[in-house]
Length: 210
Image 1 (cartoon, helix red, strand yellow):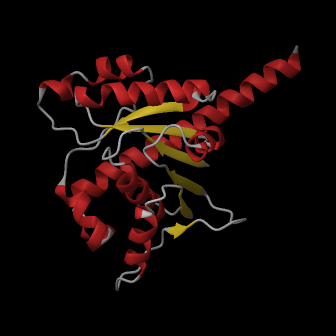
Image 2 (image 1 turned 180 degrees about the vertical axis):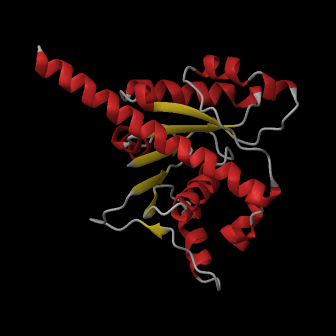
């Protein structure tokens, strides 16, 4: 399965989540690789740094011709690039990563429009990152997703310094609560891919029966 994370705004958490959600699926027993299409190569450097740590890193950087159970694609925060459009088109599921801040609404809308233009709307979802529970913004996520124009995943990710620390300290530095949060999001993403595949099979079966 191919999972593309995107948003036209920098700082939404795409790279951090590409790596950490990939690591969560590795921990769950999947063979996972990451394709870094952002010219800054932050995800590439992060994974290489993690691989030099004593614990190592089972999350791989994607190689040409490689076969993986799951492939995460980290994209640049520039919607006009060919690489972003290609990553959206090839994805089994597109994850639009955004904070619940109204300041991010306009760029998220632009990203959702690009997803629609590339024919991927039916397999795309909003993932709310940096959520602060108990706030007004956290209570209005459903409305915000409607304004963006895509359905939202049920699970969200809190604002945690631990996720930033994991850049240097690796997956094993995360506490149980943070790991559980990442597992839930990763498994919901996998579930959305399987659900989409099931819908496609039913559609094909119905078409062949006519």
